[in-house]
Image 1 (cartoon, rainbow, N blue to C red):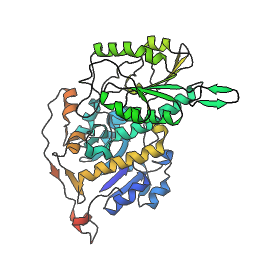
Image 2: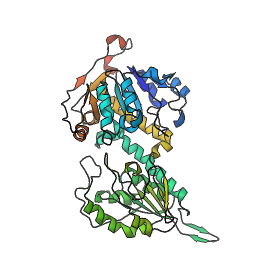
Image 3: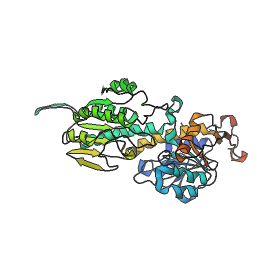
Image 4: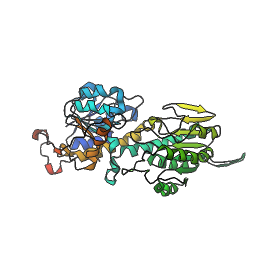
Length: 413
């Protein structure tokens, strides 16, 4: 099976979908790995490292579209400007595994269906225990939470830790984290390591213990949060009355802090406004807001995606791709996630799409010429077709001679 690892074309994207450490395990199990020239260079993985692990390196992009499997960081709606062109070059039956933003840009997936490709979107990995090692959103949120604090520390005209100096005592910075998902928890841990006084808030009361275990004070608000979390562990969209009351309660808390980091993003939805102009006006000059929901419109009313805004002396940062700013470790985690998912789809060197498997069923977006994911179909206003499980065995001659079929299994170690 020919596998192509493509160099990312999305502006400022420095990650790569597969790192050299994962190549040898795939090659041993019969995969033929082809890596586009300099695909991993910006992430810190030169071509020679891929070659040393058994990959064929240096091919031009156009020669890789005939691959059976294409691995990318961004495809379809996650790289919208290139989606139609790339889909048109795929061979019929090709499998693509990438981040695709199918809930935000569902129309882009139709081009892949028309091409006869099977598209798997990593953002749709269900939040179940068995799928934790495949959860790209959690991996990338870990990087984003860490980087958000570093950006805040750089922009803040204060130092984070308390210091006892000959010139007097310097008080610590106060940091408020809004949203205690993976990114928020990592932000809490990073801010604490830098010496700040940290407080946190989340609409899900169940995360209070997690916040406190990392050293943050949990801010409690008298709100009805019974429906704030869906069955997949993601925050739900609440009504405007809920957000209005929440903003009123947050007004005082925001004003007391030097740094506010917001992380409230709803998959496929516009981010809720949690920090208003009024709250920003109440913050001290020099304060900093880092809005991790900027790509979805932002949690702060004044956020501009990808830009820095200064309002009444308050700096508002709207980063849109923080994971790409630490591409080495982000790529390591991404590659582990993607190869672990791949292991669920391959049996004895052929595709095994078991539609009784929740992971495969929920991440598959297109198959056999149709958009098949129920969530995407609902947004597109079409009926989701029933997809039967398929097991495709490779031609006998493609297996390495002498291989024991009972041991011909994918390894991502």
